[in-house]
Image (cartoon, rainbow, N blue to C red; front, side, top):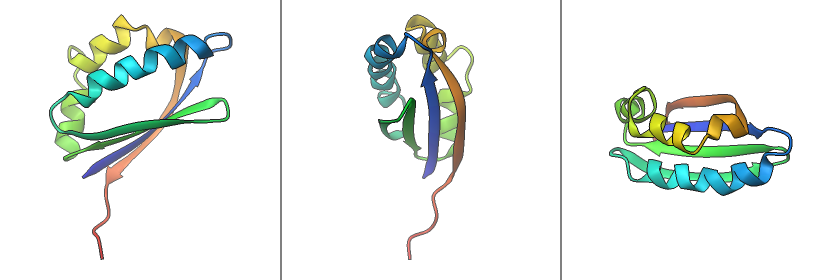
Length: 97
């Protein structure tokens, strides 16, 4: 499985709007092929999104497609006008022992 932990920071005065809009984007992402799980939580001023995909190729198909559903959802819901993406950690999960 391919995991991603993304960090976002709502812009000053945009926190409530970001918190209202981000679940809509999350709902769209959950419907995409290869998405296993998406959850999020607040960590102080930051918002943390945890994504799991079947594999890295599924992640890239969803997130890296500039004309894909995710890119359209970001634009439609103005997510990048409401918050600043701080970065992401990503990688394959470790084998179970």
